[in-house]
Amino acid sequence: DTGVSQDPRHKITKRGQNVTFRCDPISEHNRLYWYRQTLGQGPEFLTYFQNEAQLEKSRLLSDRFSAERPKGSFSTLEIQRTEQGDSAMYLCASSLAGVNTGELFFGEGSRLTVL
Amino acid sequence: AQSVSQHNHHVILSEAASLELGCNYSYGGTVNLFWYVQYPGQHLQLLLKYFSGDPLVKGIKGFEAEFIKSKFSFNLRKPSVQWSDTAEYFCAVNAQGSGTYKYIFGTGTRLKVLA
Image 1: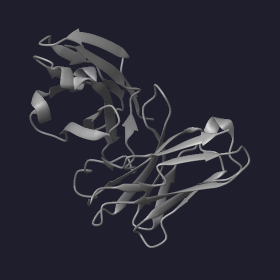
Image 2 (image 1 turned 30 degrees about the horizontal axis):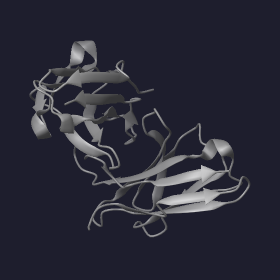
Image 3 (image 1 turned 90 degrees about the vertical axis):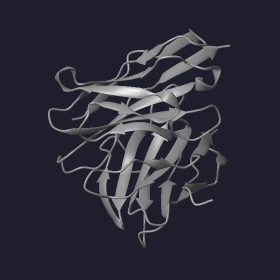
Image 4 (image 1 turned 120 degrees about the horizontal axis):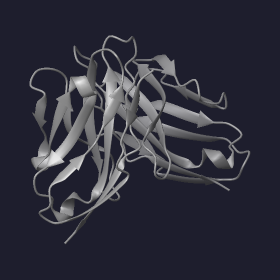
């Protein structure tokens, strides 16, 4: 399978713990995005990378959230000191930058439950 | 700032009925527009996209959408729905030339097609 892969698919944690999600984009894609989706809502933008550079981060995003893409390939999203409000599906997507911004290819998502 | 509105949150149709889902965006400049679909238990997939040219775009599975610039709209249509179209549909916008390559999604429309 050469699509976007995310790991883990499900994570249950206790409030206050740290969690990390990994995303492997489609290999030739240079842009990588993180979104969060809760029930009944559309994907909410968190951050995106072009190659290894983090170009934009949502102003609504708590500083407990951090993302990296160290070599311009896979990315990690870490949430420190989790809160129950962090429970959501975390989606990763990738695209190929071009003259017109390409379509996003999404992974299956990582579902986080904070108890 | 960009935003996307989807006014129909839940739609229930019988098979063979016609479908139109509304999408309005707010951004004064040039935009790329997308419709994504999420079938139960699956990841988000692209239905169709508009970058430029003919404002009537055709996508997969018989879907089409019309970009009306004066109305800031990009409504999704299908002349005759099938039970297999039961899914959640998301409209998304990406602003060209705005210095950002993030995609903003609407809250989604949950479509149920009755057999």
